[in-house]
Image (cartoon, rainbow, N blue to C red):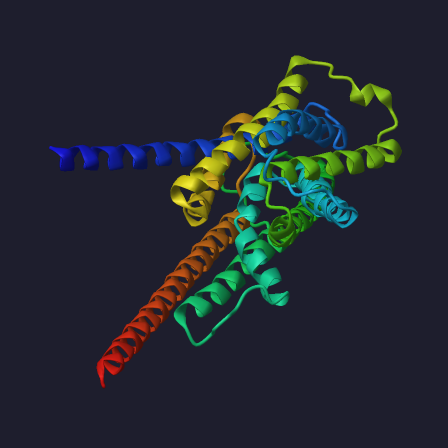
Length: 371
Protein backbone atom coordinates (compact mmCIF):
# COMPACT_ATOMS: atom_id res chain seq x y z
CA UNK A 1 0.00 0.00 0.00
CA UNK A 2 2.77 2.45 1.00
CA UNK A 3 4.69 1.53 -2.16
CA UNK A 4 1.68 2.35 -4.34
CA UNK A 5 1.22 5.66 -2.50
CA UNK A 6 4.91 6.47 -3.07
CA UNK A 7 4.60 5.74 -6.80
CA UNK A 8 1.44 7.86 -6.96
CA UNK A 9 3.21 10.78 -5.27
CA UNK A 10 6.16 10.48 -7.67
CA UNK A 11 3.78 10.45 -10.63
CA UNK A 12 1.97 13.48 -9.22
CA UNK A 13 5.27 15.37 -8.77
CA UNK A 14 6.34 14.57 -12.33
CA UNK A 15 2.97 15.75 -13.64
CA UNK A 16 3.29 19.02 -11.68
CA UNK A 17 6.78 19.54 -13.12
CA UNK A 18 5.53 18.81 -16.65
CA UNK A 19 2.66 21.28 -16.27
CA UNK A 20 5.07 23.85 -14.79
CA UNK A 21 7.53 23.45 -17.69
CA UNK A 22 4.81 23.73 -20.33
CA UNK A 23 3.31 26.76 -18.59
CA UNK A 24 6.76 28.36 -18.45
CA UNK A 25 7.28 27.91 -22.20
CA UNK A 26 3.75 29.17 -22.88
CA UNK A 27 4.51 32.34 -20.87
CA UNK A 28 7.75 32.82 -22.82
CA UNK A 29 5.94 32.25 -26.12
CA UNK A 30 3.27 34.74 -25.12
CA UNK A 31 5.94 37.35 -24.48
CA UNK A 32 7.27 37.04 -28.04
CA UNK A 33 3.77 37.57 -29.45
CA UNK A 34 2.92 40.38 -27.03
CA UNK A 35 6.19 42.21 -27.81
CA UNK A 36 5.45 42.13 -31.53
CA UNK A 37 1.85 43.23 -30.90
CA UNK A 38 3.13 46.17 -28.84
CA UNK A 39 5.37 47.27 -31.71
CA UNK A 40 2.58 46.76 -34.26
CA UNK A 41 0.19 49.07 -32.38
CA UNK A 42 2.84 51.77 -32.07
CA UNK A 43 4.44 51.34 -28.62
CA UNK A 44 7.90 52.92 -28.67
CA UNK A 45 10.92 50.59 -28.83
CA UNK A 46 12.46 52.53 -25.92
CA UNK A 47 9.34 53.14 -23.83
CA UNK A 48 8.37 49.44 -23.85
CA UNK A 49 11.50 48.16 -22.01
CA UNK A 50 11.42 51.17 -19.64
CA UNK A 51 7.90 50.33 -18.45
CA UNK A 52 8.76 46.61 -18.38
CA UNK A 53 11.72 47.18 -16.05
CA UNK A 54 9.77 49.56 -13.82
CA UNK A 55 7.13 46.87 -13.23
CA UNK A 56 9.81 44.19 -12.73
CA UNK A 57 11.60 46.34 -10.16
CA UNK A 58 8.37 47.12 -8.28
CA UNK A 59 7.56 43.39 -8.14
CA UNK A 60 10.99 41.96 -7.33
CA UNK A 61 12.45 44.70 -5.12
CA UNK A 62 10.23 44.25 -2.03
CA UNK A 63 10.33 40.43 -2.31
CA UNK A 64 14.13 40.45 -2.50
CA UNK A 65 14.37 42.90 0.41
CA UNK A 66 12.34 40.79 2.82
CA UNK A 67 13.40 37.28 1.71
CA UNK A 68 17.14 37.92 1.52
CA UNK A 69 17.74 40.27 4.44
CA UNK A 70 20.05 37.82 6.19
CA UNK A 71 22.00 36.49 3.22
CA UNK A 72 22.75 39.77 1.42
CA UNK A 73 26.46 40.71 1.62
CA UNK A 74 27.26 44.39 2.24
CA UNK A 75 27.41 46.60 -0.84
CA UNK A 76 30.78 47.88 -2.03
CA UNK A 77 31.73 50.23 -4.86
CA UNK A 78 33.23 47.35 -6.86
CA UNK A 79 29.98 45.35 -6.50
CA UNK A 80 27.92 48.34 -7.64
CA UNK A 81 30.11 48.67 -10.73
CA UNK A 82 29.68 44.96 -11.46
CA UNK A 83 25.89 45.33 -11.10
CA UNK A 84 26.05 48.24 -13.55
CA UNK A 85 27.97 46.27 -16.21
CA UNK A 86 25.77 43.22 -15.59
CA UNK A 87 22.74 45.42 -16.33
CA UNK A 88 24.45 46.83 -19.42
CA UNK A 89 24.85 43.32 -20.84
CA UNK A 90 21.84 41.48 -19.41
CA UNK A 91 19.18 44.21 -19.55
CA UNK A 92 20.09 47.10 -21.84
CA UNK A 93 21.91 45.25 -24.63
CA UNK A 94 19.86 42.07 -24.22
CA UNK A 95 16.42 43.71 -24.30
CA UNK A 96 17.49 46.41 -26.76
CA UNK A 97 18.76 43.95 -29.36
CA UNK A 98 15.70 41.76 -28.79
CA UNK A 99 13.15 44.52 -29.38
CA UNK A 100 14.96 45.62 -32.56
CA UNK A 101 15.29 42.03 -33.74
CA UNK A 102 11.65 41.16 -33.25
CA UNK A 103 10.63 44.41 -34.97
CA UNK A 104 12.52 43.58 -38.18
CA UNK A 105 12.28 39.76 -38.10
CA UNK A 106 9.53 37.68 -36.44
CA UNK A 107 8.65 36.18 -33.04
CA UNK A 108 9.09 32.65 -34.40
CA UNK A 109 12.70 33.14 -35.39
CA UNK A 110 13.43 35.18 -32.27
CA UNK A 111 12.42 32.11 -30.29
CA UNK A 112 14.38 29.79 -32.62
CA UNK A 113 17.53 31.90 -32.28
CA UNK A 114 17.28 31.78 -28.49
CA UNK A 115 17.85 28.02 -28.64
CA UNK A 116 21.44 28.83 -29.60
CA UNK A 117 22.12 30.59 -26.27
CA UNK A 118 23.46 27.45 -24.47
CA UNK A 119 25.92 26.87 -27.33
CA UNK A 120 27.06 30.52 -27.35
CA UNK A 121 27.38 30.40 -23.55
CA UNK A 122 29.59 27.31 -23.93
CA UNK A 123 31.83 29.14 -26.44
CA UNK A 124 32.21 32.20 -24.20
CA UNK A 125 32.87 30.06 -21.11
CA UNK A 126 35.49 28.08 -23.05
CA UNK A 127 37.23 31.24 -24.27
CA UNK A 128 37.33 32.53 -20.69
CA UNK A 129 38.64 29.12 -19.51
CA UNK A 130 35.59 28.57 -17.34
CA UNK A 131 34.70 25.44 -19.32
CA UNK A 132 36.91 22.45 -20.12
CA UNK A 133 36.70 20.72 -23.50
CA UNK A 134 38.01 17.19 -23.99
CA UNK A 135 37.69 16.27 -27.68
CA UNK A 136 38.85 12.73 -26.93
CA UNK A 137 35.62 12.06 -24.99
CA UNK A 138 32.10 11.81 -26.37
CA UNK A 139 30.77 14.59 -24.15
CA UNK A 140 33.43 17.06 -25.33
CA UNK A 141 32.82 16.17 -28.97
CA UNK A 142 29.04 16.49 -28.51
CA UNK A 143 29.41 20.00 -27.05
CA UNK A 144 31.62 21.16 -29.91
CA UNK A 145 29.44 19.62 -32.65
CA UNK A 146 26.30 20.98 -30.98
CA UNK A 147 27.84 24.45 -30.86
CA UNK A 148 28.77 24.28 -34.55
CA UNK A 149 25.23 23.13 -35.45
CA UNK A 150 23.59 25.89 -33.36
CA UNK A 151 25.77 28.67 -34.75
CA UNK A 152 25.36 27.26 -38.27
CA UNK A 153 21.58 27.21 -37.87
CA UNK A 154 21.60 30.82 -36.67
CA UNK A 155 23.71 31.79 -39.71
CA UNK A 156 21.26 30.06 -42.06
CA UNK A 157 18.32 31.95 -40.53
CA UNK A 158 20.25 35.22 -40.90
CA UNK A 159 21.61 34.78 -44.42
CA UNK A 160 19.01 32.59 -46.13
CA UNK A 161 15.32 33.35 -45.84
CA UNK A 162 14.11 30.72 -48.30
CA UNK A 163 10.70 30.30 -49.87
CA UNK A 164 7.41 30.83 -47.97
CA UNK A 165 5.72 27.70 -46.67
CA UNK A 166 2.22 29.07 -46.05
CA UNK A 167 0.00 30.92 -48.49
CA UNK A 168 -1.06 33.62 -46.04
CA UNK A 169 -1.23 36.57 -48.42
CA UNK A 170 -2.14 37.02 -52.06
CA UNK A 171 0.74 38.11 -54.28
CA UNK A 172 0.26 41.26 -56.44
CA UNK A 173 -0.61 40.57 -60.08
CA UNK A 174 0.33 42.45 -63.23
CA UNK A 175 3.52 43.59 -64.94
CA UNK A 176 3.09 47.19 -63.76
CA UNK A 177 3.64 46.07 -60.17
CA UNK A 178 6.73 44.03 -60.97
CA UNK A 179 9.36 46.67 -60.19
CA UNK A 180 7.59 47.83 -57.03
CA UNK A 181 7.14 44.24 -55.84
CA UNK A 182 10.83 43.48 -56.42
CA UNK A 183 11.81 46.62 -54.49
CA UNK A 184 9.53 45.76 -51.56
CA UNK A 185 10.81 42.17 -51.49
CA UNK A 186 14.43 43.38 -51.52
CA UNK A 187 13.65 45.79 -48.68
CA UNK A 188 11.98 42.98 -46.71
CA UNK A 189 15.02 40.73 -47.10
CA UNK A 190 17.34 43.52 -45.99
CA UNK A 191 15.20 44.25 -42.92
CA UNK A 192 14.98 40.52 -42.20
CA UNK A 193 18.77 40.22 -42.27
CA UNK A 194 19.17 43.16 -39.91
CA UNK A 195 16.52 41.68 -37.63
CA UNK A 196 18.39 38.38 -37.43
CA UNK A 197 21.68 40.21 -36.79
CA UNK A 198 20.02 42.08 -33.91
CA UNK A 199 18.68 38.76 -32.58
CA UNK A 200 22.19 37.31 -32.71
CA UNK A 201 23.34 40.31 -30.67
CA UNK A 202 20.50 39.53 -28.24
CA UNK A 203 21.67 35.90 -27.91
CA UNK A 204 25.31 36.89 -27.41
CA UNK A 205 24.28 39.47 -24.78
CA UNK A 206 22.14 36.88 -22.98
CA UNK A 207 24.97 34.32 -23.03
CA UNK A 208 27.51 36.91 -21.85
CA UNK A 209 25.16 37.95 -19.05
CA UNK A 210 24.85 34.35 -17.81
CA UNK A 211 28.63 33.82 -17.84
CA UNK A 212 29.30 37.14 -16.09
CA UNK A 213 26.44 36.62 -13.63
CA UNK A 214 27.95 33.30 -12.53
CA UNK A 215 31.12 35.08 -11.38
CA UNK A 216 29.16 37.90 -9.69
CA UNK A 217 26.97 35.39 -7.80
CA UNK A 218 30.09 33.97 -6.13
CA UNK A 219 30.65 37.37 -4.51
CA UNK A 220 26.97 38.24 -4.08
CA UNK A 221 24.90 35.03 -3.71
CA UNK A 222 21.55 36.77 -3.06
CA UNK A 223 19.91 35.97 -6.43
CA UNK A 224 16.70 37.99 -6.11
CA UNK A 225 18.57 41.04 -4.81
CA UNK A 226 21.07 40.73 -7.67
CA UNK A 227 18.18 40.58 -10.16
CA UNK A 228 16.61 43.66 -8.55
CA UNK A 229 19.85 45.66 -8.72
CA UNK A 230 20.30 44.57 -12.33
CA UNK A 231 16.77 45.72 -13.20
CA UNK A 232 17.40 49.05 -11.41
CA UNK A 233 20.60 49.85 -13.30
CA UNK A 234 19.05 48.60 -16.55
CA UNK A 235 16.14 50.99 -16.00
CA UNK A 236 18.55 53.90 -15.41
CA UNK A 237 20.44 53.05 -18.61
CA UNK A 238 17.25 52.85 -20.66
CA UNK A 239 16.10 56.20 -19.24
CA UNK A 240 19.38 57.78 -20.34
CA UNK A 241 18.89 56.34 -23.85
CA UNK A 242 15.28 57.55 -23.84
CA UNK A 243 16.41 61.09 -22.98
CA UNK A 244 18.07 61.23 -26.42
CA UNK A 245 16.07 58.73 -28.49
CA UNK A 246 12.48 59.34 -27.33
CA UNK A 247 11.90 63.04 -26.74
CA UNK A 248 8.25 63.11 -27.87
CA UNK A 249 6.25 62.93 -24.63
CA UNK A 250 3.21 61.57 -26.52
CA UNK A 251 5.02 58.24 -26.97
CA UNK A 252 5.11 57.85 -23.19
CA UNK A 253 1.33 57.97 -22.89
CA UNK A 254 -0.55 54.67 -22.69
CA UNK A 255 -3.25 55.40 -25.24
CA UNK A 256 -5.26 52.18 -25.27
CA UNK A 257 -6.14 49.05 -23.35
CA UNK A 258 -4.05 47.00 -25.81
CA UNK A 259 -0.93 49.02 -24.96
CA UNK A 260 -1.63 48.63 -21.24
CA UNK A 261 -2.08 44.87 -21.65
CA UNK A 262 1.22 44.41 -23.53
CA UNK A 263 3.16 46.45 -20.96
CA UNK A 264 1.58 44.66 -17.99
CA UNK A 265 2.20 41.27 -19.57
CA UNK A 266 5.87 42.13 -20.20
CA UNK A 267 6.35 43.37 -16.65
CA UNK A 268 4.18 41.01 -14.57
CA UNK A 269 4.26 37.75 -16.53
CA UNK A 270 7.66 37.90 -18.27
CA UNK A 271 9.62 39.54 -15.46
CA UNK A 272 7.64 38.39 -12.43
CA UNK A 273 5.79 35.10 -12.86
CA UNK A 274 8.34 33.63 -15.28
CA UNK A 275 11.28 34.19 -12.89
CA UNK A 276 9.42 32.54 -10.01
CA UNK A 277 8.16 29.65 -12.18
CA UNK A 278 11.58 29.09 -13.73
CA UNK A 279 13.22 29.02 -10.30
CA UNK A 280 10.67 26.42 -9.14
CA UNK A 281 11.17 24.26 -12.26
CA UNK A 282 14.97 24.38 -11.90
CA UNK A 283 14.62 23.41 -8.23
CA UNK A 284 12.35 20.45 -9.07
CA UNK A 285 13.88 19.22 -12.33
CA UNK A 286 17.27 20.90 -12.71
CA UNK A 287 18.52 23.43 -15.30
CA UNK A 288 19.00 20.81 -18.03
CA UNK A 289 15.36 19.71 -17.75
CA UNK A 290 14.22 23.32 -18.20
CA UNK A 291 16.55 23.85 -21.18
CA UNK A 292 15.35 20.65 -22.90
CA UNK A 293 11.83 22.11 -23.10
CA UNK A 294 13.07 25.31 -24.81
CA UNK A 295 12.20 24.12 -28.37
CA UNK A 296 8.57 23.67 -27.25
CA UNK A 297 8.49 27.47 -27.00
CA UNK A 298 9.52 27.83 -30.65
CA UNK A 299 6.73 25.47 -31.72
CA UNK A 300 4.15 27.41 -29.67
CA UNK A 301 5.38 30.76 -31.01
CA UNK A 302 5.18 29.53 -34.61
CA UNK A 303 1.52 28.55 -34.15
CA UNK A 304 0.59 31.70 -32.23
CA UNK A 305 2.42 34.01 -34.68
CA UNK A 306 0.67 32.43 -37.68
CA UNK A 307 -2.79 32.64 -36.03
CA UNK A 308 -2.54 35.98 -34.19
CA UNK A 309 -0.09 37.96 -36.33
CA UNK A 310 -0.42 36.23 -39.70
CA UNK A 311 3.36 35.72 -39.83
CA UNK A 312 4.80 33.70 -42.69
CA UNK A 313 7.06 30.68 -42.24
CA UNK A 314 10.08 30.28 -44.52
CA UNK A 315 12.05 27.19 -45.49
CA UNK A 316 15.43 28.67 -44.53
CA UNK A 317 14.18 29.58 -41.08
CA UNK A 318 12.69 26.13 -40.49
CA UNK A 319 15.91 24.39 -41.53
CA UNK A 320 17.98 26.74 -39.37
CA UNK A 321 15.65 26.20 -36.39
CA UNK A 322 15.98 22.41 -36.72
CA UNK A 323 19.79 22.69 -36.78
CA UNK A 324 19.77 24.95 -33.72
CA UNK A 325 17.49 22.54 -31.84
CA UNK A 326 19.70 19.55 -32.67
CA UNK A 327 22.71 21.56 -31.56
CA UNK A 328 20.95 22.49 -28.30
CA UNK A 329 20.24 18.86 -27.45
CA UNK A 330 23.80 17.86 -28.37
CA UNK A 331 25.29 20.50 -26.06
CA UNK A 332 22.91 19.55 -23.24
CA UNK A 333 23.71 15.85 -23.67
CA UNK A 334 27.41 16.64 -23.55
CA UNK A 335 27.00 18.72 -20.38
CA UNK A 336 24.88 16.04 -18.68
CA UNK A 337 27.37 13.30 -19.57
CA UNK A 338 30.24 15.47 -18.36
CA UNK A 339 28.55 15.96 -14.98
CA UNK A 340 27.94 12.23 -14.65
CA UNK A 341 31.59 11.44 -15.44
CA UNK A 342 32.79 14.11 -13.00
CA UNK A 343 30.50 12.78 -10.24
CA UNK A 344 31.60 9.20 -10.91
CA UNK A 345 35.27 10.23 -10.73
CA UNK A 346 34.60 12.07 -7.45
CA UNK A 347 32.86 9.00 -6.00
CA UNK A 348 35.71 6.74 -7.14
CA UNK A 349 38.25 9.12 -5.63
CA UNK A 350 36.31 9.26 -2.37
CA UNK A 351 36.02 5.45 -2.27
CA UNK A 352 39.76 5.16 -2.88
CA UNK A 353 40.54 7.57 -0.03
CA UNK A 354 38.16 5.73 2.31
CA UNK A 355 39.76 2.38 1.47
CA UNK A 356 43.23 3.84 1.99
CA UNK A 357 42.17 5.35 5.34
CA UNK A 358 40.62 2.04 6.40
CA UNK A 359 43.78 0.13 5.40
CA UNK A 360 46.01 2.61 7.25
CA UNK A 361 43.82 2.41 10.35
CA UNK A 362 43.92 -1.38 10.22
CA UNK A 363 47.71 -1.37 9.86
CA UNK A 364 48.08 1.06 12.76
CA UNK A 365 45.75 -1.05 14.87
CA UNK A 366 47.76 -4.23 14.13
CA UNK A 367 51.08 -2.53 14.73
CA UNK A 368 49.87 -1.13 18.06
CA UNK A 369 49.17 -4.67 19.24
CA UNK A 370 52.61 -5.98 18.28
CA UNK A 371 54.87 -6.06 21.39
